[in-house]
Image (cartoon, rainbow, N blue to C red; front, side):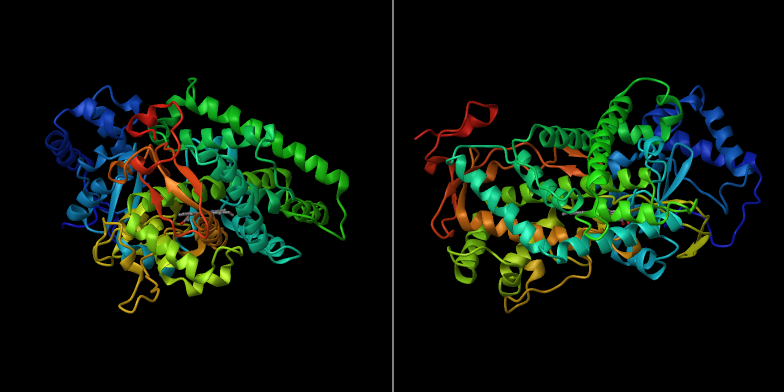
Length: 557
Ligand code: HEM
């Protein structure tokens, strides 16, 4: 059978373990060539590396313990895949060609089911939404989060926290000041800040992080921070560091070697110190909220949570406790800052690389919004080309290539396979967003994917950068509004310049792990009257680039 080497439905493994060992042992030799190190560099627990035989014996034990059900035929070439590699589309494409849309890989001795392509992902996350709604473990985070906070909780606790977070974000987004107002305000602060740069080259990473974090801060903490505020800057730097560690190769190795690595110092110890500092920052803020809390007038998400804590303080089973508050705040900040910020950075890079697309977007901004008023969400419906471009940016960059791990919360039959409760499931969003069965030019930046023959915006069912089902990104609406309002505000006011020629812009991500972090780059933002002035190429550039490694292509005028 060419497809999923998983658990066969309803089957229970009755074979004799020595036969299985022999079979897999041969595959091991053929598949990897170098038994011990081959396994080490792939996905095996270090403790079991002394000899491949002892490795395999231990796998046999897992089977005998009945952890895995059904007949398992593991092609050990699959074991050579670690998640870090899975983030690469070429790896996924090769595995998919061989094993089709559902297969199993081993992270150490832990099986993880991989889902590829729109149909398989939809069948799991939507058709069997409840079964696939668990959140999988992220080994490096488990010791700190311990299943708390909206993004990593499970069961009743997750349902409560999710319902609370969605409702509260809606309340504080729809109340006195709508979410749209908050984004517009922040977009204008960004425009002012970019104006101050007077067209010199800058790396917009930090500014974009500030903007996206501030929108969340106004909902969570009830205040936005000045871009120069030292505490805010520290918070942003810490978040950035966390993301770099989480997306690193080390973090993926930690997934299957945690039992050993946790005893030694390493990036995980740094991670724990950083998160501790962020927790302290949040705790201090919560204390200030307590002191000034007015039950009749909750100001933000923290106030609302504190009121629920107060109301349910006599219930020992309550999910409204301090740890859940801190980790929900941090989950929202993490999940919502770098994702939107990286998308904005990639958007500018792509628009700079494809000047014809940029010109059309700016022409549409000129036509629909003009130079004298702020972009509004209602403009989006009249700007099909810009809408299509934003969708295509998100599709093309596939920011979170293998999603965030899920778990099946009960024994589940899926496409003829039996997945025991608590099996980890990775949803390869990258394989959906670049699925040749759904996108005409999957690996090309082509806004036409989202336009019909008349130039109207057309939806695409395989457009799922926010995933689908019950764990669907909680900030999807906010993220989409931000992308539209912030991008159009920038392009309405500035033309772009870069020390690099468009054809030299390289999209290879700086880090390709849990999320893809775009490379560091510099752009200039030159004020323009009413947008529409497209971009500046190096030879047209009016401003010399700062002395940095990036200015080697610049022709100083
Ligand atoms: C372009 C921006 C964004 C992208 C591409 C994105 C994508 C994702 C993805 C793929 C997931 C995992 C879904 C799953 O488990 O199947 C997720 C979860 C999540 N996202 Fe986003 N996201 C973005 C922005 C935001 C923002 C602005 C927020 C702010 C509130 C946010 C909050 C969350 C939370 C809390 C979760 C966990 C949901 C849960 O476990 O129930 N995201 N996001």
